[in-house]
Each structure stands twice: as C-alpha cells, then as structure tokens.
Image 1 (cartoon, one colour):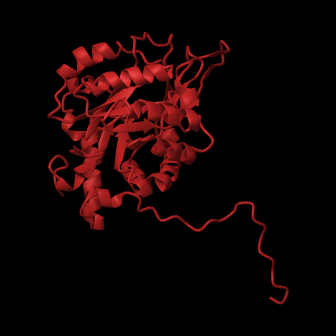
Image 2: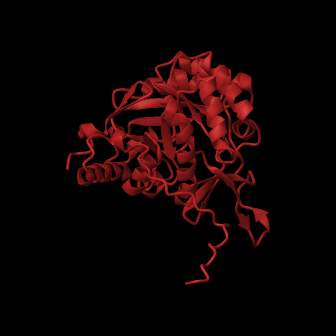
Image 3: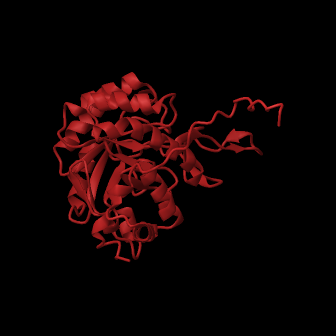
Length: 330
C-alpha cells in the first residue's frame, strides 16, 4: 500500500485547483488554519484544503454561552460566527498561512446580501484559493438560514458573489429545506462552481432540572455521526443535479473513518469534509487516507476520482404498496 501522503491516486483537481488529497477540513472546526498545527503529529499536508472559520464584514463576538453541547453520536454548536472581521483576516491572518502546504478556502457569511458581496469582494483581492459561501448557518438569529432555505434567495446570493470574484465559488447547502436538489439547480444557474453538502441540522438540548434550553442561542447546529445518513442522501440528491454540469461536491457530515469517507465518494462527492471527527481524533486524517488507499488496492481503482458517483441504487419499492394478490390456485 502506498503512503497516503505520496500516493498519486489520492491527488485530484477540484474547480481547477490541485489538491494533495480528497480530504477537506471544514469551516468552524480548525479556526483560521492554525489550531491543529499545534497538535504533535498533525500535518496540513494530509488535507487537500482547509476551510477557514466563517468570516463576516465586521467583527462579531458570537452567541452567549453555552455554545457547545455533546449529544449522542455528535454535538450541538452555536458559536454564532465569532470572528475578527474580513479586514483582519485578509491583512493579518492570511499572511501567516503556508499556502505551499495545502489550499485554503475562505468561508463567507453575512446577514444581508450586501455583506456577502462586501466580504466576497475583499477575499477576491487576497491569496485565498477559493470562496465558500455560507448561506445556511443554523446558529445565528438572522441571515444564513433564511438565505439557505429559499432557492430564490440562495440563487441571488450566488449570483451577486459571482459578479465580484473570479475565484471558485463553493455554495454550502442547508439540509433544513424542502428540496435541496432544486436549490442546487438554481445555484448552478447562478454561477456556483461547487457545493458543500451538507451544513449542520438544526437541533436543541434541554436541561430538564431547570427546564431551560442548554444552548444559549436555544438552538444550534447538530454535527457528527448522527447526521451521516441524512448527509449521504443529500449528497446523492445533489449529485443527480450537479454531475451533468461537472459541478463537484464536498461531501460532509459525520465522517470519522475511511469507510465514512468512501460512502460519501461513492454517493457522489468528489472530496470529503472532516469536521467534528477531528474532535474525536485529531490525527484521523492519515488513517482515513490509508483506508481509502487500501480500499483502492483491494478493488482495483487507479484513481480516487473513479469512485465518485459509483453508487448502485436499488429499484424503487414503495413501503406503502399493498401486498401482491395471492393466486387462489396455489
């Protein structure tokens, strides 16, 4: 088996960008790209790209505590987009990042269309490799949820951001909507280059002794293994719309190991996002990469891209269909 860091089968092109591996570290889980570099044994080179923390026009303090709560097979978070503002990120954070190690994607958030435009324009004039548009953040009281759950608003945000940047645009889709495939179709028409599927699901936790919501914001985003089955279905649904237009997908939601990553690739993802899994095991990336390489060895795949969209769907069976009539002669 090849070393995952040198296995040429794991490198790929994503929106015209060369990625060392198919793994993407997700926004909000790795700060502004420097947090995990302090962990002994961690290497940014194991990641094809790193999505920086959600960035808004002005600095934000975020939500009141509690902001994180562990749940069975996952966690709730309601950080509230705490960040120093786009000017600080561009002027002070980006110059400290090593762009020779991996790719870095900005994550643009906002409360208004104008804010999305402003932040995207600012990142366009920076060394950032691509821009992820966060139109589906479930842990703020305004902005993202309304944009991400309405196909018209989603398309408007994508179209507006497309006009102010030539960098690849990645639209982060919400699972908290009626028809994610229709939203994806509208975003493709508006000019998105890729999708991140999915963002967290909305959830809450209750302190029964005090009869209060545990999260200070009352609700937060649920991530971790508990959401993986939902995320896989959403990736497969978006893939049906995106594949004819060669629009790649970052599949994400509960990836803990190589099997999880392979499921997303087979369902239609071109790359796989790792987020909450890093909190369980900060050194999981090389393990995931070795597992993917081993699977390719066993199944004869010559490149990781050949796995994308290889899912074989079963014939449609209605759970509500009546039983077949019995032949009275038997």
